[in-house]
Length: 250
Picture 1 (cartoon, rainbow, N blue to C red):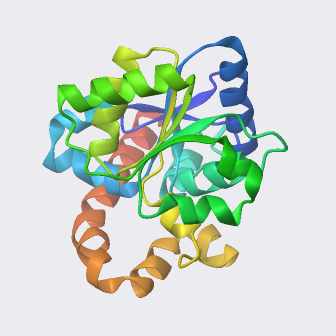
Picture 2: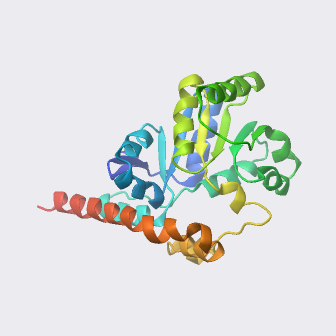
């Protein structure tokens, strides 16, 4: 049986968050590179505004369901073996930083990610071999600088905390220069896990309302994303679900 569910033309992994992390660590042990993308409604909404963006994210080696709408859609699109749980960048980074032995990693982007690392203790802080919080312009010179620095320091795990589509474009560029990298785009993860951040209660996460919790936290910054852009992503997901159900009808 396939290990993914095809949603909006993209193969979404059925693996749990724990299984996904183990898979990444296994790739690390084997010296194999991979680009992990956590797909959410914001990305789906961007498909309608930027058709080329879908082709970009389709290059990811592992795509997980970041939002509950994708999990719910899988129950209708792949009813025999749906996606059981979402795998978010926040949960993945949190689990990674709590490992008994944290493999060396880099963080590119984010707002004061060093403060977040301190919350996880000395092991996580020392494992961070490269931290870049300056302006990312995606120039050839800058991408080469990132590639050279990571190679020089022997770092293979990279968290890109830049938001979309910038982190996705950087992932493609970096992977082309250093195929052995394990790259994960994690957006605002380090702010959410940081001293000033907070996550929605578990019941809101399970109900697919984490977006509403975040909107209440930062209405000025997030209202356009959630109220203007997200409906387009949900509409695309609904159309794909209906299409899949009709194709399964006798």
